[in-house]
Length: 389
Image (cartoon, rainbow, N blue to C red; front, side, top):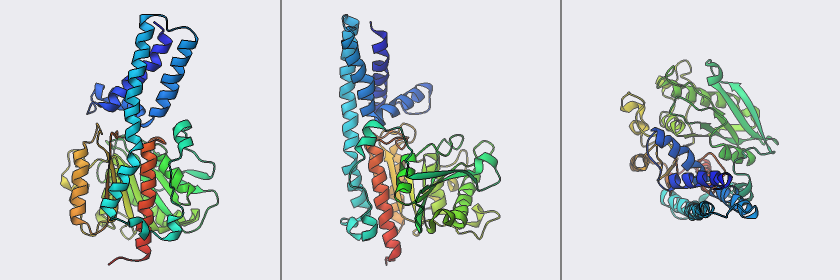
């Protein structure tokens, strides 16, 4: 049996299986399912070309397929290809599904309400070259990253990065993003980088920040850190060409939980010790593969669900229906309760076959989400210019 050929095919087969049938939870098998399934789910084209097609062609060229074991590996590669085709088709259909979610949340014809100068810059098609050939590469030559700026007193856990276009346009909107990691791990410059680099390339000023982690920190320490970040942006973002009066907050997983709490508790002095007078309101919130429940062992006040009010800002929520760590039912409940209460627009995009951390790569799925976020924020910015009754 050609072992060198078996290894890449087996890796793809395992990833494909767990992408189609993820094991829920953070058990040992669940962790294997999560990491292998995530890679196959978001990078099916790379998995096919580099781990199935190329090794298969090489194995035939070198005459390794001369036994029953060799042909069994070819059969496994063929079955895996079918599975990857199913995964890819889900990703390819995401753009149309998200567009329907936008129509449901914003009303038919919402694109016509976007100001002309903002709609002109919206991307109309996926960046296929990057998706197919450079899905892992995040950086762009036209964007500068200013790293490790301090916003608090907690050392490296209170550092942030600023991303801005090298031309430094003036009056840019701001996007703040918080990483995930169950509040116990993770770091800036890790998640949603395709989103941050894209927006910065379009003239935004984007911020990705660390925050204090448990067990040393507990709720509401993380939320206080985010409020400090918002206050820092309001004070310093003009140095990078931003107009921080237009400020969106976003987050992935635990970062989404924190971003939602910040968006729903503007200027609450309980979460702003020592900087109670700072403006921590936001223009809108982006909730990606989030967590919606209560903080570890704490009461309902630690959940975004307990802070929903009629004056909540606009929200865009995106969650995978195969998320193995946060059941999709929790995302639906949050979106339904927010819609029922808030007077602002609420978009809930349920991603078919989406895993938990779908925002790591330049995948077909996440690029569709990025375009939806850009269009959503353009509409919110347009409505901000012309207040709605």
